[in-house]
Length: 88
Image (tube, rainbow, N blue to C red; front, side, top):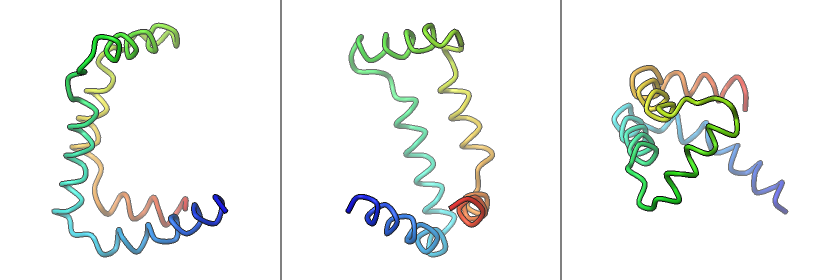
């Protein structure tokens, strides 16, 4: 059952992207960036982010902000459409 639901969802992604305007895509990107860069509400959430970086030996505590800036400035609707066509 789960496999068929996943396949159903994946078959709808190209259609939704084709119907999406650049403005709608931009709104989705902004929402994603806002969600990931929002200040953590609890100390446990914030410490979890730092401990994950420490345990992975990455020590890149600003990674979420760097990734968010990249997504906001480099990923376009056409990029997403091409990615979906190529990989999904």
